[in-house]
Amino acid sequence: MRSASLSLGALAVVATLAVAACSGGSTGASPSSAPPSPTSSSACPSSPMPVNPPGGAGSTPQVKLVVPVDTSTSTVLKPDPAQQIQCGKVQVDTKSNVVFASPKLANGQAKQLLMDIQVPRTPGPKPLVVYVPGGGFVQAGKEGNLPLRTYAADAGFVVASVQYRVQPDGATYADSVADVKSAIRYLRAHASTYQIDPGKVGVWGDSAGGYVVAMVGVTNGDKQYDVGDNLDQKSDVQAVVDKFGASDLSRIESDYDPASQQAAAQMMTVVGKYVNGPAGTQPVADTPATVAAANPITHIKATDPPFVIFHGSADTLISPSQTLMLHNALRAAGVKSTRYVVDGAGHGDLSFTGDTKSALQWTAANIAAPLVDFLDQNLKG
Image (cartoon, rainbow, N blue to C red):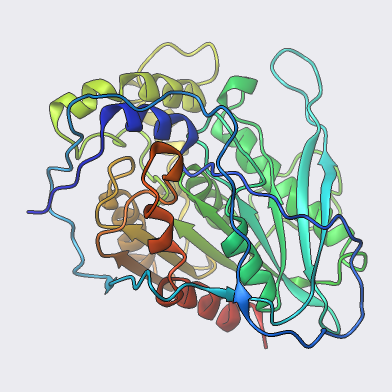
């Protein structure tokens, strides 16, 4: 049996932020069809610390994962933090703060949803990857994960990082899924502007974003989530990258010790409202029909797009069993799914908790390469 630990104070931060590390470095330039500039490889841009993250670290008991990490249907990868991803093979232009939708919130006010779009200067239309950030269902910072997003753009993909409505907006999971599908339709409608091949679209999400993209992938063709603008465009995707996302929202904390489960009570209240609606007061475990509809496993069908799934073996926020359930259900239905367990890795970039080495495990070249290889295999050619 393996165990992992993280301070409960850090858990409070992570429960609200997940992997919401902020980033910068946008050029604000418009996409260009110019050929790539000959450049040498260099370190990918870094993501600066978030400004005023909620919560805070403290001297508290330890969070413990008390179930074995099952790797029987997965591939174990041992990260090499000394060998980091490199960028700079091509020029990448960024268009920031593009408004793609203005849905109404629970209070009746409209909220502008924004995206940042990275376009590599390579000839012709390119596959699109829509990146969906984490944030514990309470934030959705599109600026996050800049190093890996740039790495994917450097590999020849248009990468659009998108906002979506979250629980403090009065939103449910269905609203978040609808927002990501709205972003996909918008980008297809503006494919020529951003040099996108509209027939080759993938989604990639971390943590809460991993959950959302799993739902997006298994609801291809389900029109109940297609609301808003550009309804003449499809929201279907051809590939899904799920990094340490939840699947059964009623069991997020069930693999941790009792003290950890008690500490997660506030997070589970947020999850309950995210599933049942802002007026919902029941725990998700008491609303089985509703939580089943919010579980991507419920929607799996043989025609779903291929998945690649990543999870750290030492994740103390979302148990590795969450992605294992999804992976095994996809395979049982005949869907192509590959799952990687990253040995010793935690829940993404936790540098804002004082863990300055956590991000290096996820930006190690041997961990990032399978992600881009999957996108190459399923979105190129």
